[in-house]
Amino acid sequence: MAKVTAENLFIAKRLGIDFEASELKLDKWGNVDFYCQTGNLMILLEVEKGQKHPCTNVIKVWPYLEENPELKIFLIQIVRQENKAPKNRIALCKYMGKKMESEFPNRFKYLFRNWHDDLIDDIRSTVAEKLTELT
Picture 1 (cartoon, rainbow, N blue to C red):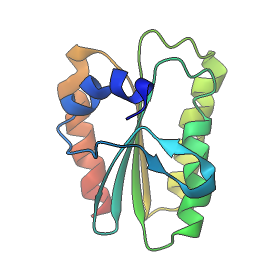
Picture 2 (picture 1 turned 180 degrees about the vertical axis):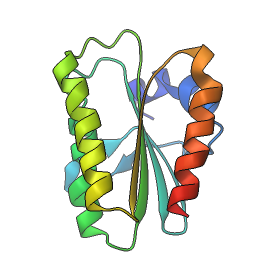
Picture 3 (picture 1 turned 45 degrees about the horizontal axis):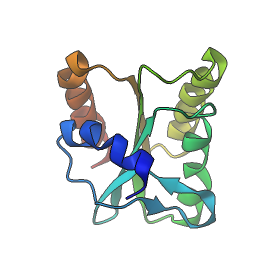
C-alpha cells in the first residue's frame, strides 16, 4: 500500500466498505487510492490530502469507463481539511462528476464530500443512495 493511501486508510474504514488492501491501476490512466469490486460494480475512493489538481482523479475514470463497457463505477471523492486545492479545481471535480453521470447514466455515479468525522453518517447515507441507483 502506498504511503499516501495508508495515511487515508482511516477514512476508507469509516465508510464501511470492504476495500481491497492495494491501489487499483486504471490501465494507463493512473491509480485509485481504494477500490472494491463486486461483479461488474466497482466502488472507487479517492481521498485528497495534498492533491492540488483533484479533478484529474475524476477525469481519469472517463476513459477507463469507455474502455470497459461492462463495468459500472461509483466514484467517491473525499477532500480532507488540509487539502489546499484552489476552489476552481474543486469546482471542476464536481462539474466533471456530473458530466460523467450524464454521459454514463446507468454506469457511473459520483459523490464529492469534504471530510469531517461529524459527517460520516451523512456520507454513508448518500453512498447507500447512490449505490441503489447503480444496482
